[in-house]
Amino acid sequence: MINRRFKKCLITGITGSGGSYLAEHILSKDHKIKIFGIYRSLGNKNLLKNKRIKLFKGDLCNFNKTQKIIKKINPDLIFHLASTANVSESFNLPKKTIENNNTVTLNLLEVIRINKINPLIIICSTSEVYGKISKKDIPIKETKNISPVNPYSVSKAFQDLLSQIYFESYRLKIIITRMFSYMNARKNYLFQTAFAKQIVDIERGKKKILTHGNLSSIRNIIDISDAMEAYWLAAKRGRIGEIYNISGEKVISVGNYLKKLKKLSNVKIKSKIDKKLLRPVDVTLQIADAKKFIRDTHWSPKISFEKSMEKLLEECRKS
Image 1 (spheres, rainbow, N blue to C red):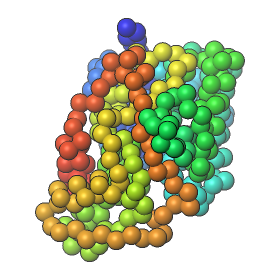
Image 2: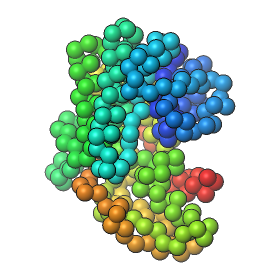
Image 3: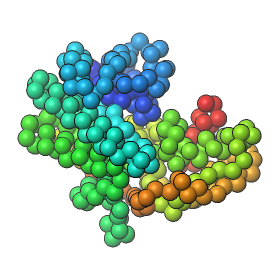
Image 4: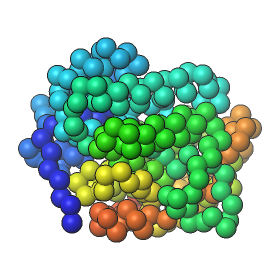
């Protein structure tokens, strides 16, 4: 089995929710690696306290600034997480979402190409690129044609295709991961987190009724720590040039997820639909086939679905 080692890891979007969790996870797994990050705005300030993390303020949409920072770091591993990632917001800001996400990826890959830097690049993509799926295509394999249905997933599909071009044409060392749903207390717009934070507000008397959008969508869901371990093992053991689905075994509808989360509260939770939360087009069926990733990396989720829900709610209660 492949087992790569790295000295300098760059995480784009490091102060965002996924990036900050990933930085913390890698530091817990490798006590010698140095972590670098490029950020546009400082989300998670806890990273400033860690002496093993060095942050560079910069906008990846600025090619010259990006080039200067990456040449200075000269990383041997890059996790590319920087993006405008709110699906619902992307419907309101399609131009901003697509221009930002396309530009940051193109600039990153082009800097690597023209400066002949040779890192392993993990492109952290999303299951959203598959779009609407029929039951006959379940579980979704990596060979399924991508068919994005919202501005965010269009930008991520472009990212995936561009990354494949840079692998095929310029031999950049690229692995694409397509993450399915995971519980992330730092990402407020995910349905899991939105529900948990509203429950906490109701418990504290700040809110009376939980509001939600479409509850019929079906998802694979895993814990944030299992998701971050998957990213790390993709770098350590993944095969260059591959596309990997990453997902857990738990399959549940958004509505049943909400019912289970309500039961964990110490007060009665009332809920109602808010039509403003309904998307113009929704991806309702996301059940993955992650066998290839599991085979190549020997990854498996360690945190149970029930424990993960409890963790999410407790983390929201602490915030």
